[in-house]
Amino acid sequence: MTQRAFLIGILTASGCFGQFYPTGANVNLYFPHLADGGPVYQQWQTSLEFVNPHPTLTAHVSVQLYGDQGFPLSLDLGLGAHTLHSFTVPPLGSVTLRSTIASDKVVTGQAMATSDVPLQGTVLFRSIAYGLASVELSAPATLPTSRYLSPATGDLGVALANISGSSKFFQVTAVDASGTTVSTAMVGVAGLGHTSFNLSEKLPSISSDFRGSVVITPQIPGDQVLAWTVNSNGSVLATLPSGPLEWPISHPDRIMLVFKRLLGAAPALLVGLHNNLSLQNPPTLSISSDPSINTSADAASDTVQISLALSELMSDSPSELAFLVAHELAHIAQYRSGSLTVLLPNDLANKEADADLMAMILVLSAGFDPYGAAGAMGKLNVANGSSGLVSSTFDKLSDPSTAFSTARMNSMLGVITQACSYTTLSSIGYCAPYKTAIHPHFPGSAPL
Picture 1 (spheres, rainbow, N blue to C red):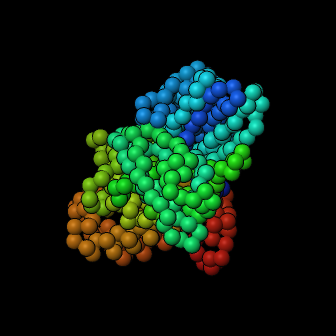
Picture 2: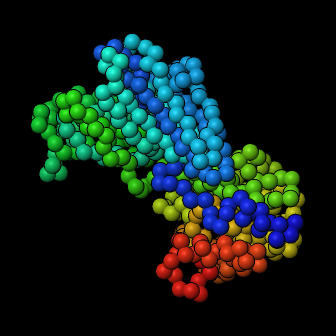
Picture 3: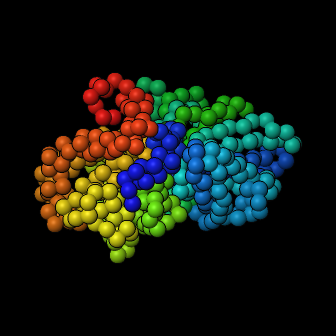
């Protein structure tokens, strides 16, 4: 395969820029509250809306519903009552699932959606009285968090969902306008279950005119909470800003997002060969909870393994994580091609450099910042100075410490330059528009 064919494939798939996604687009989307049915004078209807921002990829989506006690919830969302709803969303298209108000009692629960392409997700709740819609509230899909914070009154509506398979307790704390804790309670939720309440129900000691905030945290440090709140003032309902922490984040969800974004950009990497990396032919992703920083690609099992500790080291930088995941996907591409390398001359000395170059182009195609590669190497170099923090088999290298050297970190600028120096990329102008859009204040000598 020639470099020209390889690059034309990338440009055909990605255009002049990498694929960028709207804020909040994810491959795992969580909806902490569903409500359907009720008596004719007070009925609820839930709609789940999904938008696919990708211009070329069809999203394959599954939505699993769970009831209050954590059992699969069968709900008619327009195509019959099911606990699992599977469908596709076309490129730049949208799909709406709307409950049919099938019960004379209000049924509540939660929904978890998974997609192979990042989607925007929105939930809408419609209140209907005697056949007439009176209120509709909307909220974006959310992610688990280690703490949820929301403005609050005593009538605040709170929905809590448990994403774990075992029962969990969550601490709900009311804080007044001066920052003083006024009441707290533990609320239990069944595994994969859901509960909803007004704040004063769980904290009856707060005053009727209470105004302040509510803080929701897991009882066990390190666990995650999934919550949603709605402001209530008599008959007036209003949604509130989403309350998850910006950071720390849910690392399993971020690893999955990075992995699938990279795969979405990957088919062009192996154009002309018969073992493309793609969403349709993905390697297996294994997320390890081993207490060491590690990543690897295994040819025998066609598996990329990423440790939670590695994602935690990259902290709040998905672009840094993306380069390391892309490097392992590049190794899978090498294995599948039957060659030590894909882009560079086929010899062992070029194997890691080839994976770095392929990763850099993949990162660019997926809409991540290529400069994150140097940040990733720098953090690994720092972590490697602490004995036992980084796995002795990192990336399955015989001497992992050489992978984190300052020299290799510094070489990332050269890899960016190399990725942008191909004749085809230069003539079509891939990197120059990228630089203008993403790094407009960089000096002219910078490659991106």
